[in-house]
Amino acid sequence: MASGDMIPENRKKKLDSLFEAFSIISEGTYVYLCDMYYDYSRWSKNLVDTFGLPSEYMYSAGSIWEEHIHPEDRAAYHLGIEEVFNGSSQDHDMQYRARNINGEYDYCTCRGVVIEDEFGQPAYFGGAIRNLGEQSHVDALTGLRNQYGFFEDVQEVIKEKTPSRIIVFGIGKLTEINEVYGYHIGNNILQQFGRYLMEQVGRRGGTYRLDGAKFAVITGIQDIESLKDKYEKLRSHFREGLRANGTFVSLEMNAGTLQLKDFNTDDQTVYACLNFAYDESKINRHGDMVEFHENMNDEGKKQIEKLHMIRNSISQKDKGFFLLYQPVIDAETEELIGAEALLRWENSEYGMIPPDIFIPLLEKDPLFPTLGEWILKTALESAGKVHKLLPDFIVNVNLSYAQIEKPDFVDVVRKVLRETQYPPEKLCLEVTERCRLLDVELLRNVMVSLKAGGVKIALDDFGTGFSSVGLLKDLPFDIIKIDRGFVQKIEDDDKERKLVNHFTEVASTFGADVCVEGIETVGMRDILRKYCVHSFQGYYYSRPIPMEKLLSELEKGPKCFAK
Ligand code: C2E
Ligand code: CA
Ligand code: CA
Image (cartoon, rainbow, N blue to C red; front, side, top):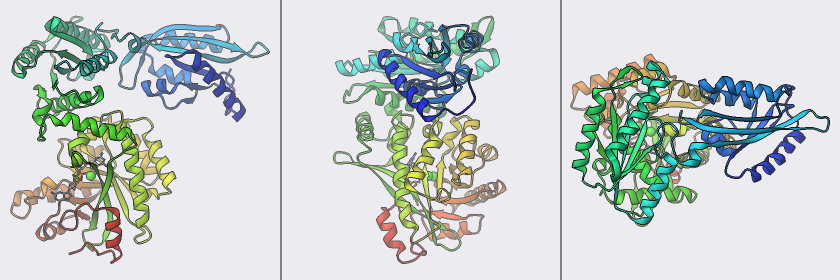
């Protein structure tokens, strides 16, 4: 049926107006509409976002969607769609599991009809997809309340000011279990885990399955010690192993918890804090339960409230945020070659808050990409002004791994470059080793697309993670930034000198330039100049400063920051 031609503008307009009409009558569900002649479709934005589809507008949407359908349901789906397109069926009514952006399968029902043109030929195929999990708040696999139910209940607790404790649990390595033993076993494990958790919690609280291998409990029990005891029992129970469809599997767990007694917050902020504690448990504490406040060196209680304020600032068009720029200096000539944009947040009540207090907590937040776009745009607009004085000036912008994960990330970078008319080869994006949490293939695709456009990519904080060298081997970085922590004692410590020298050699082997951060003294500079180091950054040259200050210094010439 599909002609294989590009859809003409008038047909696209017609598709849009029909789509709008369709959306009105199908309120509350996802809608799709396909111009069958061109096999060109428009799908609702929330459907595209929930399932991580490439765009609202798609050619061959049926095949793209098929990739998201559970392998066991795929053949039936394929047949159904084929019948619609070859004219042997006029409607479509199916239930299947479709993979969402978190890699999870949601039960969906899909209803569609074919609309014929005046000659009786199939012209449009349109319908609605209902995500059962989202609507019933029940997880189809375990029968527990799902994440929508969880958020609803957290909102309730906040509204009613009910003192509560929330715990997020996760089964470690479920992806590997699925790969090694298959989905059946993975699903069976999730079911057994959910049942066990519910039995343990009983009437003392609510049990939820969030996404993937994550579960949650909301309870009135406040005492952390007795909670930790209970968690350790649960943990050893699953470590001893359980039998799933005849296979014996031992499970590792992680857990983060938070006590909710300050209600000046919202469900998303609470979840961001819980996730932070959870990641800490997973990455740094081998699965021990981590309480949110324990690991914040800030005056505990206020933390959630502060985060709530910061989240609100993002919603209010990034109010209170601004950027400072720290000069990057050529190691040999000591001329200014670029600057790194560093985020700040300031508020009358809390003063100026440094980024490491809130970025690790917010980077997984659905709001963060909005802020990320603002950062990029602001940095490029400011850096553009430097080019009159220093045409080769490069601005470095930090990325958070959750930004990279968004399907439209590369498009956003391109859009901002276009809008600001900023030359891509004068932009360097910095990713930290936390990006190893992402799929290497995804990261490589993103890097290759950006680099093809001229953008440079740096690996930040090199050496702080355990897989630094592995990352260098797998991914084409232009610049390696060696973390401040490795050079602090370089003047008195021979071991440290050897280590840094080794790092610089490793980086050069992979063809990357080296930037050393945290140069604070002339002695550090002199030692590091003997190694394969291309650029410096540090208080010795300059602290992070406003762009106006950088510009006024630069009036004196490119060596303005040299001492
Ligand atoms: P980073 O990317 O490693 O940035 C360098 C940090 O080291 C900055 O801290 C800078 O002020 C500090 N620094 C530079 N030279 C010296 C020195 O000689 N001595 C000492 N003691 N410190 C030095 P800052 O601005 O507080 O930023 C902390 C971290 O927050 C950054 O570490 C980065 O990971 C994150 N961050 C900052 N801005 C952004 C942003 O726009 N987006 C994202 N995703 N992360 C950001
Ligand atoms: Ca950085
Ligand atoms: Ca760094």
